[in-house]
Amino acid sequence: MTLAVVYSRALIGVNAPLVEVEAHLANGLPAFNIVGLPDTEVKESRDRVRAAIIQSGFDFPAKKITVNLAPADLPKESGRFDLPIAVGILAASGQIQTQRLPEYELAGELALSGQIRPIRGAVAMTWACARSQRCFILPVENAQQAAALHGTQVYGADSLLAVAAHLNNLQALPLTRNDRLPETHAEALPDLADVQGQHSARLALEIAAAGAHSLLMIGPPGTGKSMLAQRLPGILPLLNDDELISVWSLHSLRETHQQTFSRCRPFRAPHHSASAVALVGGGSDPRPGEISLAHHGVLFLDELPEFDRKVLEVLREPLENGEIHISRAARQVVFPARFQLIAAMNPCPCGYFGHAARACRCTPDAVARYRSRISGPLLDRIDLSIEVPSLPTEALIQNRAAESSASVRERVLAARRQQLTRQGKPNAQLSNTELQHIACIQPDAQELLAGSLEKLALSARSYHRLLRVARTLADLDKETDVNKTHILRAIGFRRPF
Image (cartoon, rainbow, N blue to C red; front, side):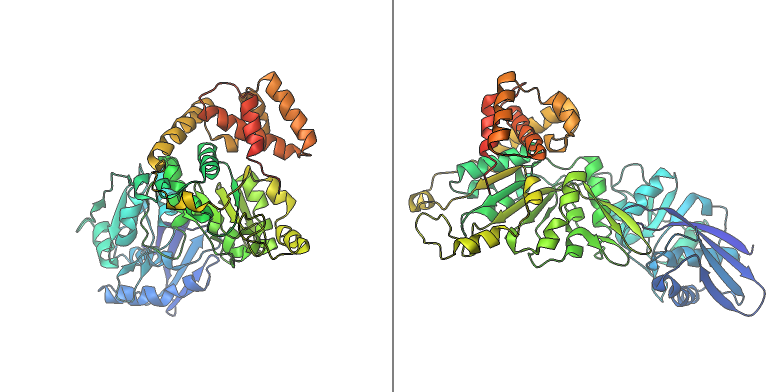
């Protein structure tokens, strides 16, 4: 046998296309060449593979070795191809049986000793492998996590020697089993009972959770804006199986291989000094940014005007489309980014504009410049905008128990169930056409909304966002139709900026 084919996976964003690793041995001067658009990390695998084969007790063929990674026009990166390349060479030289190779896909980085190191993107690759009806051999560190995906057969291997013994029917690798997906509950998260007062802000947070709406909180320092945002995941529904797989796949693309995932929705809070690439993703080999890591979860931007304006503007398309397109000279990648935006800001540079007890030191021009850092098109994409005022001393020192996250979450879950039964997704994700059929707005409420549209000079996008919020308010009230009260309340939660 002078030719062997081993299957593996590449990574293009969150997609994992199939790669055929073809190893060919020919007579001639000893050489080892890798073709098929490999990057530097893949080219360096020649030395790792040679050392790993020798250290594992096999003979490294003294022949002209050519390894082709097909398809040739697909970029190949990282050390995940070390293991399939080594197995292909051993199979082509007759040291590993080839009968079982079509049943498996392999990925793993080899140490010089022959041990297999963990890789990134294991969950995304395993999910693609499961659809091809093959088994996947992965590093032990990745196998337990990947085995949690339904319909997958994953084997964890710690060395090249163990993989060879398995393929030669000498000693089978243990089939990794992880029948239970994590069941972490929201009770472990920060509780809304810690927040004193702020009834209006708490209600806005509940509406945002019930309909997956975006929310902007404006108020002086120390009024609880960040505290409220951090408690939003505790009242959101847990991830379902499909959402969980999508979130795991994205997070597995990060550099850190060992990660603990749960059913709680992601909560990402990047610092205001974050760059546009850090927020949306990118790089020569595109990686997901904060908005993709917040997919099916919450993206919290504290001190919103302190972000660079160009950084904030990149949020506009993902807020509408739920995905981000990253184009580079050699690669084009699409990452999902269906996140719930929660933002907080001060009303002015000093933070005390409109404060009841402390005087603002900012000039009108300074306040206007500060607020102009947030563009109108971005504000137009935010469903709820509220003021979070400072609390009087009496409200802070009283020991009256506030409503807990558990009780608020029950109402949120009831509203979400109603939306999923009716339309299969939260109200915030309804298209304009779907909204017209699902809103069920009463005639007098429609007249009120049309009049408000003219008086407040709202855009067409604002009109539809108001209607979505009103639909969520009706769901929380367990009402079939949207009435005037729901419209008025929705308008009240859209604070003029």
